[in-house]
Length: 492
Image (cartoon, rainbow, N blue to C red):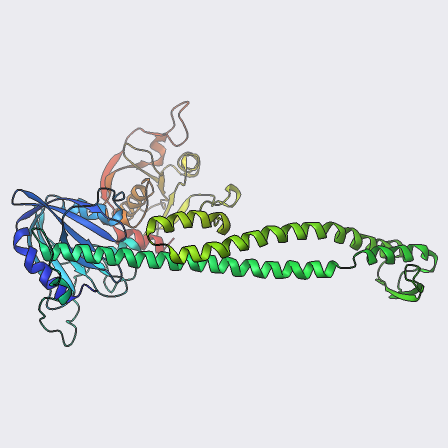
């Protein structure tokens, strides 16, 4: 079951007229690269689903939204900030391809939402009046796209051999129900198909993890078995040590071996005992007693470890077929929780230890070659602004809220250019945000940034770290610009 160009055509034919002139009330994140647009038309709420899942990308109306949906993600917030309150003028299919375009009218002008439903990672683009890309799903999710933000969007060429198609068979028999029967049938069938596909994918991942863990355990158990085999006859090390001890007078440094009567054997045959020529008599004797003590300790520990791992392997062997037989996601989630006690939690790569953390301010170079320093924390902000900064250096800080202190190193005889000032203000804004990701550029974060010569910065008596006062300052209104920030990051 697929949602191809024919299905898209049928769905839009059924719902297009009903949605024309609808006002967008909100955008909800449905998770798994899916969003619900709540549109108000004809005195009723309509719920338009837009999905960009690999293999299940689609667009259709559905009876209601999921009220247990997750919190809005970066792309959902970006759509809300740009589209909320907009009027949907048109909803159309592009050519005979799997591309839908939603045309919105806002107070600031027209916006176009383009949904590409093909490829390994379907994409969604929001375009301005000049059809330049304002934001796109691949930019927020970190995927690769054939477009860059800010450039004019162009539709891909129509696939060769594309022809107009009638209603696909699975949309005719059985018929759907409700006000938009074809849309609702698509919603029902593809939601179920996607859930089944996700269940299979989760099974595959969990089964793979269990298989890898079982393989690892078998490998360790094999090594432990070999270690136990090597310990067989460890009492012999003690016997050889006793023989060397009884013949101490005949030992000397430089001997590679010695032949002695084996008083521990039945026939008391002679035995050759290897020695380390670099060691003296006492050290060679101790070598054999040390091997004995080590083997005596290691045996029980290896057997105990062997028992633990064998029990874990047997539990995983029983769990594996249960995963394959799991009938729904709820059962699979319970099995995943059970598996975690055997798989173990992987160490997150998160924060480094304090001694490994970077020290000193972040360093950037402006487009005119001026050094820009950015504090990493409150203590470092104080050090940067009150100790490292020279009197004529320029201090910047986001107005009215905690954030990074930024210093522009000035050059004697040169005035700080406005472009450098704006670039430093970009850094002051970005490093003052509590949540820093590519989404903040999409959402267009903005703020006032105060700036002044560093000699006008002082610290009130008893003030906490990072809090300073400016005896005089000027203010810039800054909106984050990805192009400027990327240029600064490249010259760091």
